[in-house]
Length: 77
Image (cartoon, rainbow, N blue to C red; front, side):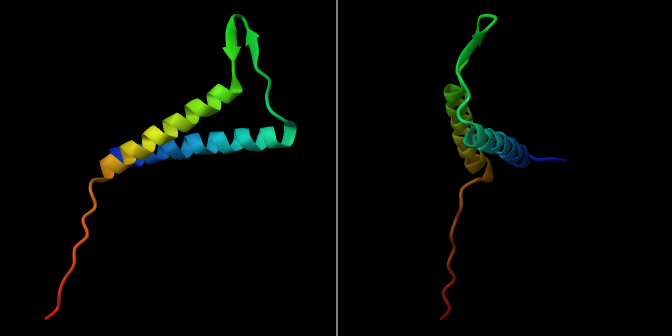
């Protein structure tokens, strides 16, 4: 059964894959235009910023889900 941590990592991985594909498309073909269709605005630069905010939020959730890291030392005497 998948854990919360693995689910968050999967979501982040999927978002980054979509962002990479969109970036590659725009590098090859130029930026997508901003347009309105049936009263809906499509703003690709805002979409990219929203995806990056989601990735940042997921990074914080993954870090908190993974728990605190504790470094231990052993001294030999």
